[in-house]
Length: 160
Image 1: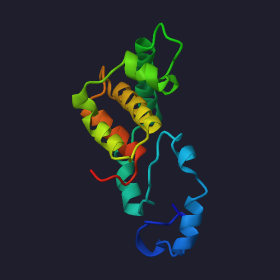
Image 2 (image 1 turned 90 degrees about the horizontal axis):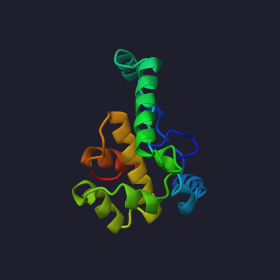
Image 3 (image 1 turned 135 degrees about the vertical axis):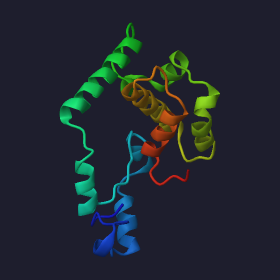
Image 4 (image 1 turned 180 degrees about the vertical axis):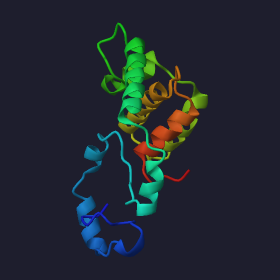
């Protein structure tokens, strides 16, 4: 959110850029352009302690690659007989028509859409992300957990 990349940071390295500089920097990305970005995640710089603690729990690349391959296989099975290979390729209308999710799953996303925080294009992107998260979790269909995670990845800083 800032050219110095320290906005919202922790410790002694807080951003001290004037608000005008931050607004000008953010205005370089138009709303329609940002609407085409699937994942919008705000990251804070980790502390050394966080990096050390994370090292003990980090997965190897081989473990992650195996999970990704399993997710791709699940998507390929679901998309067999269609012109698409990944959830990202599915047009929104086809996604909603061929793989509809129950209202009990989409309730939160529907509320966010109706409040104006999410465009129709953004809602389709949330649904695609939810399907990918379901594939990564090894579940057949996205549930409220995957949809909530997808919203968090799409709308940084949204209130829970």
